[in-house]
Image (cartoon, each protein chain N blue to C red):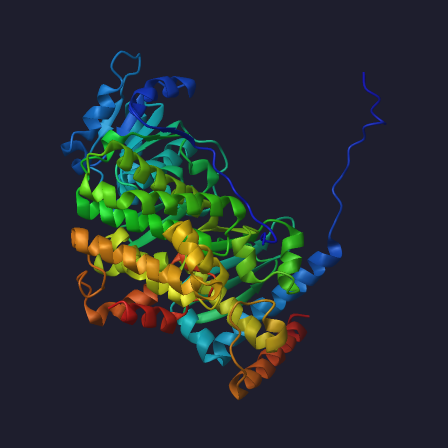
Length: 392
Length: 179
């Protein structure tokens, strides 16, 4: 059934495949830019991935204005303001982010500050506060968060020790580059956590209050790609086809959740990250089946609808309609268990290093997370605590 | 040259009646939050967690607005004309959406899900304010009406009935005093 009203927006051009990086100079020219600032982190730089991007400019007339390669894991508004100053001092005219979620979100923050001609990111906190098109912005993801196609950024306010959220369609990059070379060195544990993260994006987008036929199409396509490629990519990380498929899955899930938003699983995972520094993908992976169970009585038909992409046609037709929602949750648990056995990622909060006495603090943070506004069921403190205890 | 009379400017219509209803509802919501802080333990517990000072503005583009302020441990409804510098502003994009929200044709959850609003400021703080507004609506309306406004209606209790009576009393008394 169609929702009574929905919105969908995605303007990002996607270049995916072999030698995709080499398209950047031409695309920059199309955007009227020729002096980009490259943003990345130490891990990406040490893995040689930044060099791959820099090498792709060989033979072009593009001068790289500067490379900032020290973005921390939990980037802050102070880092954003500092990089914006470098952008101005070096007369850059565009931004290229090479990295994972923190690098991409930082780049989005820098773009806000330099476009708005401000010195402080804090002025723009909130949703839909930006009013003009932003500087040319290209993203080369190296993990698989889907941030390359989302209109949102989460950046730390170090003074208040809170995570600030920014959303606006203007924040969307102009171009996302998916090149298999950028993810082929990712270790199995991070590959597994990234897959669970993308799966959670797709499943929560499919269950949420903003779900719509277009976001559903992206979400189910993402789930199918994960289902069909995750085992192979863990066995053979150098397999370019599987790597590219997983990068595409993350991107598709990103488009889905940028338009249908995420829910209680993300609210809890954000809180787990904030209070106990549990990596985002791990937190999502641990909480996902519990979030599906929590939402089961509110949206059983949506959860049942996830079974087909999760298990494929042959298995789907064997399962009676009344059992499909529960089977979908079981399929997610089976996939998580497979990833645990293959890579050793934790599937319980206890194993992820969360102290039991922190569960109440986590629940308190989770009910104030923006994602909870889009969950099909209103999650209160007691509900959050119950889910955390079940996952412990 | 075009015939200017054939292509006249069309001025936008007005939504006076709907804005009046929205303004009245915002009065009950604002006064309800002020009174609820003194009456209802759930509202008190939520607002005690807000920063102090803290100002929240609920506005409608080309429509009415209302402001709430917490300062020195006191919560005050600042009315609909106060010029404030809000810490958090929740802005409804069209007077029609605000009317639907106020008469229960659209729940708060749907207003968020359908992007009928935008927020200036800390989104997590907005959620805390929405929880308080939902509680006020749960006190203002009996369950069968409240379910049109909020996602999770608390089950009936004598405490809720008592607080509902006190809340209406305070709102009406406040209106009388303001006039």
